[in-house]
Length: 497
Image 1: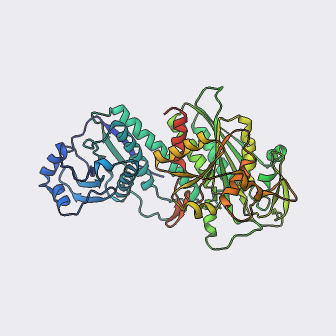
Image 2: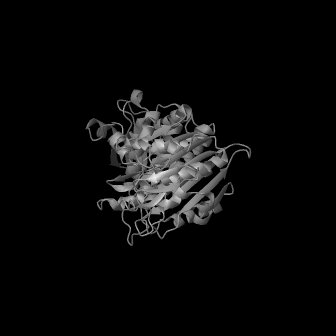
Image 3: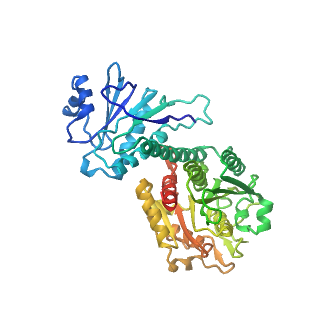
């Protein structure tokens, strides 16, 4: 995937700059000043007229394109809304509008003029991060299985100038952070968008090894089915019984902190295709079940971003990868399996398979004695009924961890909402024939799924993100890259950044 690069200039007078696209954020109701006013004069008042005629409203997220002059071929006006109402949500909308407009332009390079924005250095730095991430997001185009890709962006370079309140070094740092997050998001999207005949558990293992070869601080190991049997991972292995594709447990260890520091752990559900198994899904939209590894792909994207940010912490990323298929060997409803923890599970529905791979991965991660564990999974359709596609469900056995994820979601505008895992829900998992069954009684499906996982996480601080409604969309169909921004922001916070 090609993507634009980002550079920081020492200075850039917009009245003198030469560029094929000049991007001007404009606040509603504020008079044009300084270099922007000079540029407007050079253009015979074109910017002022666009505002006076209503062609450009300056509402947050609005945009308008103007023809430029010999030095500035195009001018892209971006609305910021009113200065007093400009917040993180406004920053996100502004950045999304910039990304969408720049991805659609024929310009090969652009300059973002932020000098006149009445923002604090902290808010400007955050805006720069968000802009870099959103431009990369907008410029992503899936091409892997297309013979003649269309709508490829022309943009190759974006520049930003230092401002008095933000040094050149801080501008670069903000841009680099945004690029690292954007690249992690797009890596996650690419893995999710690949068809399941390419993106298999073995393919994910190869991607992990390739990532490890690029970075000295990242080591990768793969547990095959033989090793998992030796460890007693009967629950995870039961999911892949019906498939010709071997299941894999992928372990990525990033060592950015001190050797003695306990790691933060991410555990991802990696069902590369989910037919439902013997509990076969309806045919409609079954193609979307290639996205059932959205948790796994977000672990990949987050680990890549953490490495590129060089965070001074230790992180272990674990992906439980399997393919859920029906066959003569497939697990049947009513079968009982033994998990790595020794707890037995009656499988009443083979389409509730994500929790079966996760429970063994969550037991395995305990050997790292982690500070905190976050698992990420497209676990239940029920979470979409509760939260739609706007928020990821957050379940946790520790308030501080839950609050850290909620705050990270707010800062990155990749938001979550906390859900309960009260003891009263646990009775729905009672079974006559095993220690527990893998589905509840039919109500609060996302909650009982989290309660199932909670039985395997009692020895450490743990949170579960149900991203079934946020990691991909049906229209336009594709992976979103969420919740990588939230996870990266959470880990940056834990790293003191």
